[in-house]
Length: 82
Image 1 (cartoon, rainbow, N blue to C red):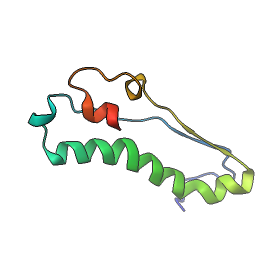
Image 2: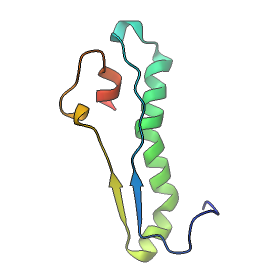
Image 3: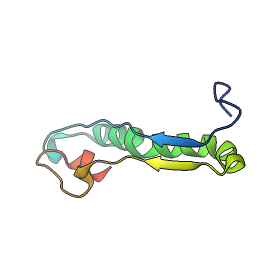
Image 4: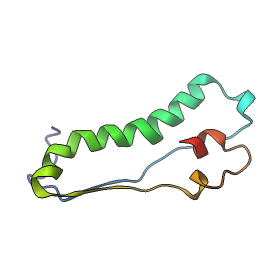
């Protein structure tokens, strides 16, 4: 458990993300992996790390997303997918 957390934790808010814009054929697999690691895997890892304290306090988890998850803009495929 990260030591910088308070003893009691009532909530965690996952609200961060990056984008890599461009046509999908111009993006590398590493470009896509970076977006997915930060936008998907990162928030899941943070949540898993604090779950024991959230359970103790019956706390909540909030994932903030983007409208791009529903309506993808041109050249924003990896971001919209994440």
